[in-house]
Amino acid sequence: MREISFSQAIVEATAEEMRRDPNVCVWGLDVGPYGGAFGCTRGLYEEFGPERVFDMPISELGYVGLGVGAAATGLRPVVELQFSDWITLPSDALINQAAKMRYMFGGVLAVPMVLRAPVGGYLAAAGQHSNSYESMFAHIPGLKVVLPSTPYDAKGLLKSAIRDNNTVLFFEHKKLYEIKGPVPEEEYTIPLGKADIKRPGNDVTVVAYAFMVRKALAAAEQLAQEGISVEVLDLRTVSPLDEEAILSSVKKTQRLVIVQETWRRCSVGAEVAAVVAEQALDYLDAPIVRVTAKDVPIPFSPVLENYVLPQEADIVAAVRRVLRA
Image (spheres, rainbow, N blue to C red):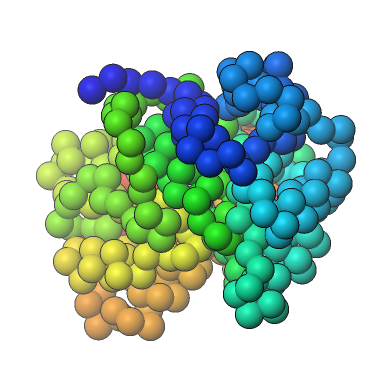
């Protein structure tokens, strides 16, 4: 099977959906002839023209709000934020409008918009370009939140997101854009809300998503040299959350480590821990352990950033800790 990069998978998914449905359009900062800050709209302007691919001014509130209105009136916009950190600016349009309109109008009206945005650190980009805000929006009923970890998942999930009649926040980790992986040329989709076992195991379940899946897999490979069998479960979608997959894995391994790049409090990881504590506590042979960022703003200094953000060694230590319990 051919291998393409994560960013190429995003381009392919968008182009295929634009060919399939003339209501799909794209807008954001530098998404036209330039092809997007991370190359995720490269070639779309040349194929579909300025009638369907729009460069927007630097006004996230304005062009995300435009996306909400356009989706409510019949289009399927794919809106790109150049950095997800600026999602705080249009958050009212997302939380008070996009997330609620279908419910408030009894299903007569839908808001089928996809908001794509790069997330994450490990690039020494400092506190305003290194955040992961998925936990904030996973809290909001009416929004779906997706964080793929591979090119294959990115393409299949984005196609499903574009076809979904709800607003989907599609977060892409910046460290994954150049990662290559197998992606079939034929048509496929991946349903939203379904987790995936990236590595089967029997001793410990490690739940992760986005870039943390790669770190979890690296830790699992290291631990395998010690005879420790780690199951790595990739959430892929954090809202809706695949509780069945989480519980099934934990019931098998009877130990749980949760890994997320973002902060600990009131987070996706906290929700996963709560689900297991409420529904599978009797299966656990050790306390749940979470590996997260420290609760401080992301530093600019690479040394400090590496101290604040989760590392492979932290995951290895967490697995050893639950096995000792």
